[in-house]
Amino acid sequence: MNFQIIIGRSHGGITRFITWDNLGSNNPLSKQKLKKLILNYNAELLFADKLIAIEGDSERILLNSIMRKINPTLLSEKIAIIPVGTNFKGFKDSLADLLFDKILLITDIDFSEKDTEDNNIYSTNKNIQLLFSSNLDTTIKDHPLNKTLKQEKSFLTKEWNLMPNGNLTNSDNDSISSNFKIVTEGYSNEFKFWPRTLESAMVTASHQNFDLYKKNELLRNDVKVSLDKNPYLLNDIEGKLLRSTVKKADFALNTLDFINNKTFRIPQYLKKGLEWFGNND
Image: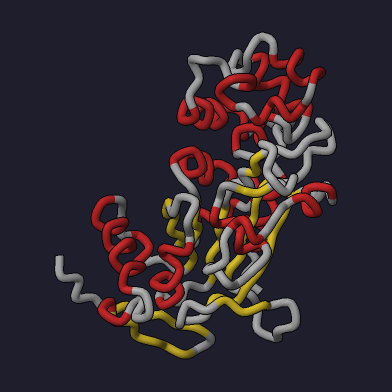
């Protein structure tokens, strides 16, 4: 319970020893959040070389199957998967001090289409700040998504160098390979809208995906009416997309049956993120 732990990490032939008491020295709350996670979730991150940070249960249920489909060799690596919700910042300083080879943050874009005073569109997810700024003291209101959503990219991502002191530096012109990447949903060219969560991204990654979910009675009977009226209605997961009896965990468990289907397509943001994560060059 006192966490008297020393962790050894090897990078490029150099071994470093990390003392638990020194984690997140500039942010003691970060260490406390990480300690709660280890005590109440699991301690695999203490023995892992790489880390995937996710929002919650749905991603955790699906990730192993997705990795098996995209890059099976990932399953033989020492990888930890932890839930960080929509505020990676709370764990960042301590995770940085643990010197993982790579950290992949998979998150939802969670944009709000409600009218605002300045007619801008914002995310409700603090993780999205990492797409635009290394300064996490900014607010999500400092990063409107209007221009981003108009670009209709198939996925959104940003790479950083996460330093041991918790600072993020731009890796675009850096000779050092980036060790931190954030990925989130992109525009669906097949359905002509931008999914905002995992569920809508999975269903609309292809027409074949949509048909699989519909055939297996996971989608509402009138989902095609909503689709024809306005594809963005599919972002109303509980009201317009999924049957009332299908909850998010049910959706994820049923998706496990579809992933190995040859016609099933993994959304681009998950595919590209895991491809980067599995590249050890």
